[in-house]
Length: 416
Ligand SMILES: C[C@H](O)[C@@H](O)[C@@H](O)[C@H](O)C(=O)O
Ligand SMILES: [Mg+2]
Image 1: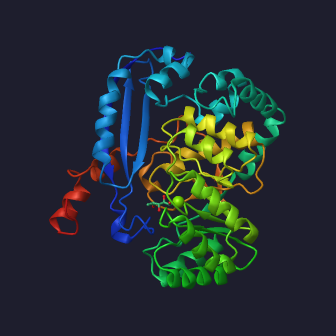
Image 2: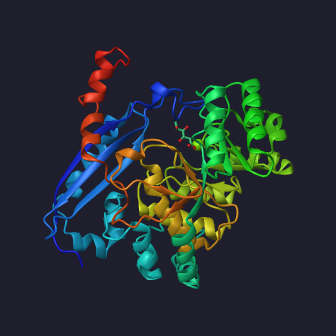
């Protein structure tokens, strides 16, 4: 058992100027700077154990998250590591933060007993759909043939789809080049940004569907752009391209609206996917109760912790809804791979209609970046949650004093 206590917490505002290349652009976020509030926790453990955490932002506003982290730090600094590890639920309830652990996180979760996993979850507000006893039963069933599933992950990895070919700000030439490269690399599932202009969407969807053929999967992402009826009529115009899902068709808070859209598109065989902006288990509970989504997209950072994600994975299993995690942001691929590999091995036990998003940006800034092989996430084998960034990246991209930002400001390429 790990001995020692947390001696310090530092949080930095780290931003990458992805907006300059339109990377990550969509119908609502035309100029995202993939950024992170990046936390380093130091301890007095014998091996000088450190913890790393981040939450993803789009640039402006990171300073607010930095303030929030500093405001909570008094609950973390000075804490005894053993107290945290032996009673996650209490720590989480006080803080809803995640702890850094010695195994790759996915392996630590897989090796935990059902009782230990359940002890990390706050069931308050969700017992009308998932009781502690029901969660325990799901996890006990998940222990059956777990080794076989773990071997499958280690051999073939977790299936992924790519969004990096068709950001809304990319030209048709960029889209065609990136799509051809992705096909060459074995990708068979592609997500396209839509929602700003219908004729532009029809042109770009035709372009990519013609390139990938009819056997490969195509998903659409509108990033909350439409009203409910507008979403239905707009997607009906794109149905000819046979999308598997429309993602975030309307406000991420409009649960019943998503239900109306789901019902209207069901005859076309188009599902609704959402969740990247869904901030807690209670919202997901209602999406599931209302049958308002057919693909549940957890976000490792938006849900605030591993604890909250565990409760959502178990509710998705209860409702038999596939989890297809969101990862369109800096560090999100590195984090969420742990959660979805655990989901397959210990909760869902299935891969049908399941895939994890992958975006091909900024992995070079991480000490333990994701490994993609044959369009699948290979399980990370380094300790932790894969969150640790390279120190020179943090220095160079710290906002606004880092050398990259100072150069961009000097060259008048950005205004702050
Ligand atoms: C602004 C961001 O890049 C979003 O467009 C991105 O997270 C997207 O919604 C996705 O699903 O990857
Ligand atoms: Mg999205």
